[in-house]
Image 1 (cartoon, rainbow, N blue to C red):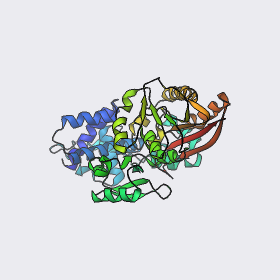
Image 2 (image 1 turned 45 degrees about the vertical axis):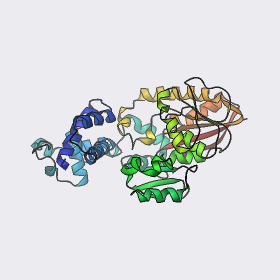
Image 3 (image 1 turned 90 degrees about the vertical axis):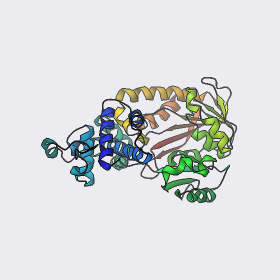
Image 4 (image 1 turned 90 degrees about the horizontal axis):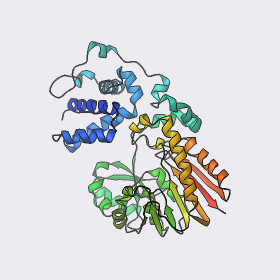
Length: 383
C-alpha cells in the first residue's frame, strides 16, 4: 500500500470509530476485509488511527472537521506534510481536498491542545495539579514498550542478550533492572525465543514498580486478576502460594499457559469461590484507565461522567469484598491504572473510614513524567 492508500484506510476506520465503533473492532474489521494489506501496512494504518485518536481535538481543530478526513488533514498540518501528497484522488488515495477544506482549520485552543474531554478537565487538574498539563501532553504520544524479566528463568543481562540476538534492543530501568524498555524491534517480540520460553513478559514499568513495592513473602490472592500479569510478577518475586481470581473467568483463560511458560504455579479460583485468608490481597480494580490512554486512546473519548460514578461504586464494593480475605497482620494492596483522585485517594480514604482495623502503609502514584503509564498503589495493613 502507498502512504496515500494507508491514509485512505485510516480515514475510513476513523469514521467508523467516530460513529461509535470500538477502535480495535474497527481495525479488525478493516484487516479482515483487506487481505491485500501486509503486516507492515496493517501496522502503519493502526499507527495512523491511534495517533489521530490520541490527538483527536487538536487535529480536528487543525483539520477543520471532526471526521476521518479532518483528522488526517490535521496530521498533515501538524507534521508539516503537504496534504496534496496524500489527498491525490488517484488510485486508492483519498479524494482531493475541496477549496473549503483547504481554507478550514485553525490553531487549537489551549484546552483543545491537551486532547482531553472538556467535562474531565476539572477532575484532571484537581488530581494532578501542576503536572496536569504535562501529563495530558505526554498522553498524546505513543507509550513505550516495557518487558519484565522473569527471574525464575533468567537474569536481565542474559535476557537482554537473547533479545538482541533477534534484533530487539532494550535498555534496563536504572532503579528496577528487571524492567527492560524496548528501544528497537518491538514488533518482533511475539516470535522471539526469549518471549516464547518465558524469560520475559510484556508488562508496563509502572505496575512492575508497584509490584516490586509489595511484600515479597507469604500467600497472595490476586482478586481481580484479569490476564494475571501481576500474579505472575509476584510469583516470580518469590511470593506464594499464589491464587488468581476474576469475576470473569474468561479473562484468565491464558494464565495457565503463561504460568507454565514462566515456570510458575498459579492456582485459579472460580468466580465468587475464593476461600480462606491470605497474607496479601491485591485488588487491581476496574477503572477509567485514564493512566493508559496512550495505549487505548479511544477510551478517553468514550468515558462519561456516569461511567466514572459507576466505576467508583464498583471499586468501593470490590475493596470491601477483598478486605474480607486479608489475614490478621496481612496486607491489602489497592491498585488502579487511573490518575484521578476519585478513583484513588478518595477510595482509600473512604475504605479506611469504613474499616478501622486497617492502617495505611504507603501510597505511590506513577506518571508518564517519571515512570510510564499512569498508575496508583495504596498498601494497607490489617492490625
